[in-house]
Length: 188
Image 1 (cartoon, rainbow, N blue to C red):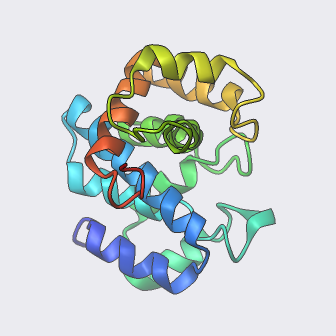
Image 2 (image 1 turned 90 degrees about the vertical axis):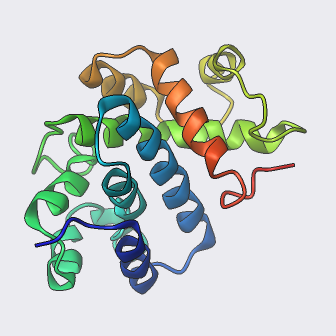
């Protein structure tokens, strides 16, 4: 079976998702995953595809997120390894099926919520993503009222799994999202 591509991931997600904010989130996570793939020497396109497709079952099954990934993706020819990688981002939150095991899975777990904070911060900045620095993002991260729905404890767990520090993960998220700021509508 061929590795999942970003083009195929976009095609599949469009069959199961209609809400614009979910596509924006998919694009943000995909962008961050691409930057982390570069950092870890992974296949950038493959990591981006996994990031794009990670919430494939969310709109249809919000209360059973990650429990319907296999039934939606297996008929599309997505291989079991990729399906398991996607399911792993919900470990300990919505499913206990698979704990993140490799750098790609651990990265997905770490950036899922963090991209929401980066995105919210970019929206409030007059310059959007341009010139965003880790130091200022960390201040926003520490402010629990800012992007309050983004689970900081979950982000910390993901970062610990990767063995990196918060600044390193933030740097990759910023880099990836800056490269895709037009797609994310974050350019000014």
